[in-house]
Image (tube, rainbow, N blue to C red; front, top):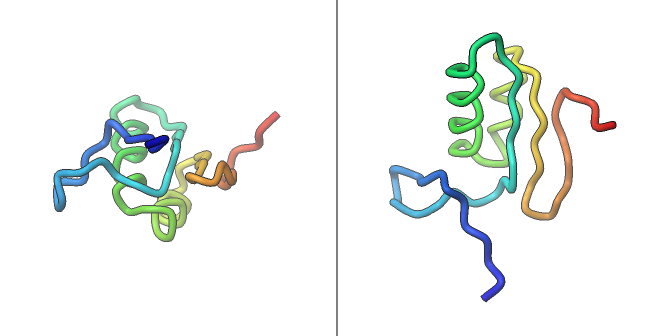
Length: 75
């Protein structure tokens, strides 16, 4: 039906997370970047980006409407 599903599953519902189309995080270790990305996606559009900002992790978020936000510049 034209709906895209994420590979990240919400453990509370068992369904793919909704809200973000993509979250990218820069970190010194890939474990931190991957964990930050996954948790931000689970927190959703209203909390995920702000959570990453509070942690000081550079990030780029794209929501389902393809609106871009975050602390990284798109070139």
